[in-house]
Length: 227
Image (tube, rainbow, N blue to C red):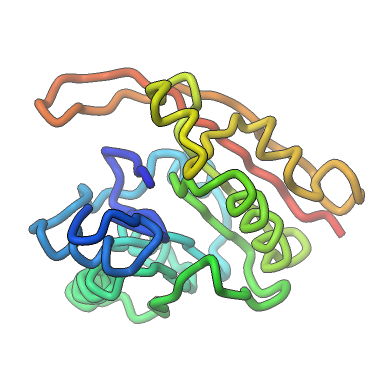
């Protein structure tokens, strides 16, 4: 699992440690527990880019981590459900929400692979840098479309495959699709109920662990439920 190095969010199946299996809560609890703060606390740049102009409604942040995106949304009036597999990460996120006086966030500790979202419940479903195996990731994206109400948006952002080292890119435990591949996995173009607004590979500048600026590309899919 990977995440935007400039982000405040963590992946839903999430971060190092005492177990080698990054699909477990123990893995991510250990990683979050070993760090003072794993992510920056800032919202993901694509969330800010695509959501800033929208009127607030209800949002589901899948892979909320330490809460960067959820806190940013809540501060702008969104009613947020922040979902993550790590109780350690969500405790940290809840502490930040309390410190900022943000009561409109429902933190839920759940394994996204065994979870069924409420139907047509959200104006925004956001999935940031959550990389699973190909079948699991496709199934999750399809499942999350059910959670979006008519007129709502599904925003999925990942690492573009060209930015991922070959050893990781072809790891069957992780899938790094392009935006076009993500769109193909959704009912966006087959049932007439979705419209793809963005399927792109924009660049952003981030810092590596040594503070050196790097330019990388994201895979960004934004789709709107029309019926």
